[in-house]
Amino acid sequence: MRVLALARQDLRLTLRDRSSIFWIFIAPLLWVYMFGFISRSTPTRIGLLVVEQQSSALADRLVDLLRAENFEVTVVPPGGLAPAGKDAPPRSVTIPAGFEESIAARRHVALDLKEAERASAEGTFAAEIALHRAIVRLLAGEALGPMPPAEDALRVRSSWAVERAIPSGYHQSIPGNLVMFVLISTMTYGAGLLVTERKKGILQRLATSPLTRGEILAGKAFGRAAIASVQVGVFLLIGFAVFRIDWGRSPVGLVAVLGLFVLTAAAMGLLSGSWFKSAEAASGMGIVLVLAMSALGGCWWPAEVVPDWLRLAGYAFPTAWAMRGLHELISWGGGLGDVLVPCGILALFGLGAGLLATRLLRREV
Image (cartoon, rainbow, N blue to C red):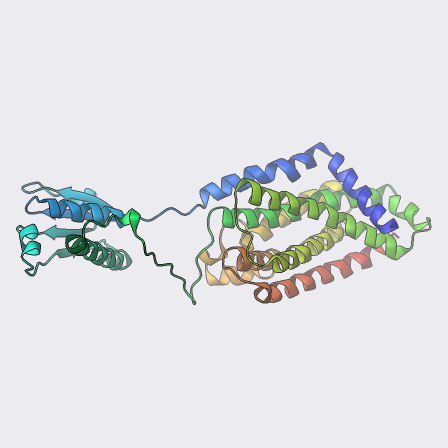
């Protein structure tokens, strides 16, 4: 109970600071929205020029089906001039004269798909697949009646066993900002409060109280953990109630990752508070370190978009392991077994920081 009382007092002192109210409760919402908006994924539309050698209802229907396949379609009517230069789409398909009559008579028809030199191979491959889908839908509509794409009764949901989708939007910004702000709260406010207590001799006075050295150290560690837990709670609430993201199918895995990261952040805050000689130095260096770890650890952008050497360098920090564990659950549908390695590494980070902080604080407690 005495340990919890110390932790509760540290949390109360932190929340009394007006600036901490902004950084713990208001800034996360602003940062999540900003980063989520910037990193949101938008559907890629493929540029396609459609040249109609003869107008017909069937040719117009094929154009509509191509637009439904996410093409940015530019139509050149019979006798019209195709865009040239930079305005020309990288790919073009020609619908020949007599297209409707040939389909009605079940005769062979060739649609000529051409690509410009600047066209990407991936885009052309996607164009070929989408063009085949549009043709199949067109022929099926002729045989069975119109089949609007929006009314499809059968849909295919694909998944890849090797490559994982790169996290984007709020599925990237909420976990990333959660990790960053938890460290900010512990390595600035939590560390600064501990430095102040050291300078004012509060820790030495506590050492003369009935509290044991272990209770004092545990109380200070749990105080930083309480600050971090409040920050985590804010992000869970924002993610669930405001941005409606799915936190994954494994509540146990989520609790394990977040719990161990909270303890790691608390240990790092304790280490920062025991290392620096002034609250200003602890807060200033703390924010610099957190920003560096956040950038390298994949909090600002997905780790999958940076070079391999930079992604590997990020694993030298707990931020990268926390992000890996959260993405395993939130972005890639993993379970508890998928986050055991990140959890184990976070535990090692927390244990190392905690032991070093305890050794430094023993001189003053």
